[in-house]
Length: 585
Image (cartoon, rainbow, N blue to C red):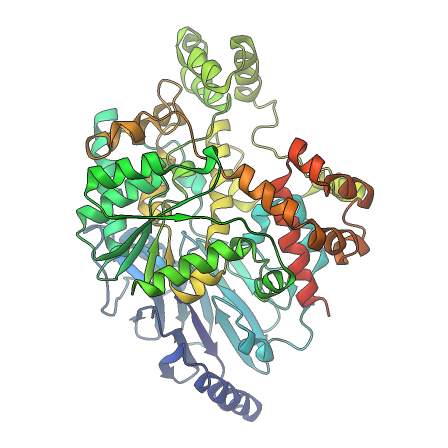
């Protein structure tokens, strides 16, 4: 796994010294972990299977993780680095300009102050807590670390409510009192009683700023993707999934260009037409000259044991909820001798897959009334299967700032009082900028949800799970492009399709359908009802009055599941219930 634990303390305290000796003994019993740094007031432990790099920053500080140069895209930085200013905030701003990657920086100043900075991708979690004079910074909460949590650790029910109302909240502050987290792109100054957080990077800083010509974008997108994928591929032995979709095909083409050693090219399919994309995966493999392994994703159900195993982290285990798939990927990875998994996740958001009239609203904001003669409105109407007048109405309302934009409606199986709370709930920090255009706001909302892809799971614990399309240089560039340019002609990911057309088969580039696992997960939930009904109807969330039992009972019925779905919402609810069940003891 790619994880770390850092311990910080003020030397000289006897209680702290004894606590560190206990930590030392516990760490020695963990074969998957090893000490990377021992220094006065600071120790760093990293996962041994996929060890993260560690380098000094300005002598007293350290950067843990993978760091790459921006000027020579993809060149890994292994040596110690220095910035022009030793001040933590200034040093981090300089790092944002010079480097990218997945990293956490721990910055110490001569006066004893300590700050922690988390890179904008959020690929490494950054949990923080204090216990017995020691401040811990970590990516994960494996069971052996639970003994070093604060004695007062408990479920924070207000945070649980936030998670139920908006699943993107799962990736923000954990739901445990006494355990915090640094947000992606933010620096947090540590203190004995309070901590201040300053945002240094946010998506809104880049949204709509890139006025590059179409020709420039067609050149730049492949350059960025090749550089970022190549950087993460490195000299690792890879397993890469080729789903049959555009995004995984783009990543596969970049892996081939990087000549990265790849142990397995893997395609999963299910026993229904919507979830069987082998035709397209084979076309990609044939075009790129790859030996494709096809695996049938067998029917599965959720179990108490599987839910318990995915619920021990600081966050609900949504990323590992499909335990059978999760473990199968890891088993294949280990059997093939691979230590890193590369995916195409995040491409839907970064390249703009979302079919929405908000794109027309962006066009109206940019072009004004003269833009009414544009074909954009016809293209969006055809794409979203709405009337032209509906698209024009929504675009006018949203462009004027009178609409709901990217607002989401909370699930109707939540209790009435909780759903009322949704109206007063603060927006995700990345959506706080009121100047975001409607379509860019929708894209940023999607980026907030992609943070869930980094959640702990069997794959990420046993190998190094990477989503290279969510790398900072790619995200920043894509945010800068207008949504209209990214979806030219009313086509999802139109710019990305054109940029990679020369290296992928036409069947994938021109494909208008999209594979769906909806039916598969519907069958999974239906088969899991004997476990889910008592768990959700008689569980802790129901006892707290956070769900409407009568409404939920109707939904937890096989016939209703077939007709109405609610699959994603029920999976999120199940992950949160399982997690609360572990921690609320």
